[in-house]
Image 1 (tube, rainbow, N blue to C red):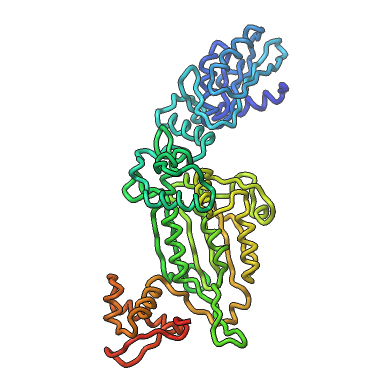
Image 2: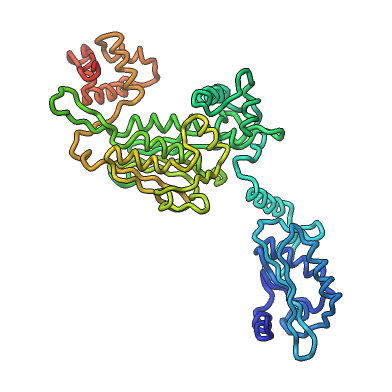
Length: 467
């Protein structure tokens, strides 16, 4: 640093990253200030030989003085980059400029105590402030999904879903050596349970209702009228573990994603094709659940269905080094939640080597749809699907929901029935009006026909249902 640079610096006055000390007789206070600057700003400077009013007076700086500064700097933990430079004054005295910098989150301590720089003053760090800085530092070193979920026990996990996961992983040949092993042993092998407790990954994957802080995951589902978010046709929120959430989304899409129907020349049957590529949509859904940034409080996976597009949102931006453009080519797999991704991979639900987005693009092309769009918006990652151009010219009808499928099965097993009889067979707590709406959808789709009038109306299968 030159003398002119020193004068400009001193003229700024003390602040969040700058402290003046008349001499190294105030070395201890100076190190506390540097420690506080590292915690607040990640960097800071102390000028020895400058009064608190910014007057440059200098001091004699011997080799022993520089050793004292170096020894005091080493008492700041964790280690930061601290350098000392001397600026010679015309008087023959010098100003010692001590600069500290670190990219670590802290908390930094001097002689075992934490400090925080607030404005131009240095304060002892409170317990809550120290704890927050400590958590930030550890989270940078240990991924969120490996942290222990406070208060969670093995009993808070869905045993049936764990069993299903083990069975599907064995079937996919992605899990071996589990014959006769208890579920807890397998979970430990997968690093979902450790000697310290149940990890957050396990709570996300298998946490059932009643667990501490339940739930850790949720999905928000919406069917909008038109192409904007001005009016809902359906709006739902589900909470639970990842595999339950995946099922909720798939059921919602079964109910709401239209089917493009057309007659094939020379055949009497219609060919029905979902408006959006099922395998690509499923891949995008799984990726959203796996790669969501669960550390963001209030985040979720969102599915928004419009008349002209389907959007799948996931809280959190792409991992460092990835961009939406890179996802369209060969790229490295950088899962944010490695333990969660590993379990989905073992169940055969995702590929492990960054092929998910490529699969989405390939399936959309096979389906005749425009290339899906990948985008980062307001701290979230979005996959946007649009239907094939020819779908606009085809007859489009809603796909069957689960209740509609049950109605078809009931009529297939029992023959023609009236609405009250169908309602009894369903055994659901719905009104006759809701059932009539479902029956109307099935009639419009050609799945069932009606005979008779009024209360004597009976319903029977249409030709399409028998095919």
